[in-house]
Image (cartoon, rainbow, N blue to C red; front, top):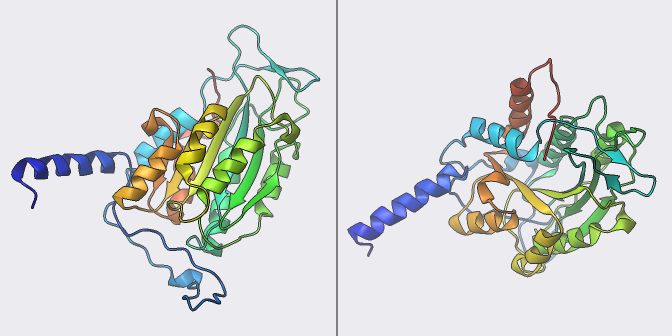
Length: 295
């Protein structure tokens, strides 16, 4: 039985966790499309139920995303023919960004399509205009690679596979939904290997990871065994979708770089992913439709 002092401590802890943008609910459940071991088949997209106990602080998430993930005050960076980005005085670094996309059974194919579309919209908000990913820019450019994971991990494209934002968005659209379990540790292990020059990663750029997931791992390598090596390679951000038990919150918080509040962004459900992007665009404003950056 919890005494009066213990109850006060527990309530304070719950308030702190809620402030970070999470709510409490059941654990996520993954399933297989055609189970052959007596298990239940996956429900259809329309059968997935929503479990919510509190609205996320959406505007706070918008502000966090703009200030922490999307950078500030653009200054150009010149790139050499050897793929090394050179810096002059007070010049910002371009980024090599790896997207890790959860494709497990708990998402469902319809929600997976929503997430893919919004990833492309998010990348479109990066400066410089007209295309922050154009390999023809003499000022340098950002690059993006993508892997997806469920029961398996699949490399979709490397950092240097696409030459502009149009090609990147088309490549993201073509990523097929997998379904299955959530082997997040295996995805992080693959991410470590992606930060290599053979995959188009450059020296002298920001090396970053953005993982989009709706829950904690339930198969594969223990995440705690691979995270130290990943954090040594890159700055890790997370966009979490849904609400979680305390154990899920602790695990998801462990994914990201420190300080945790500046690297983890939470939305209540998949419809809120699109709402988040719309609010970011509205806050940026039509006269300045991208987020510039600086160190």
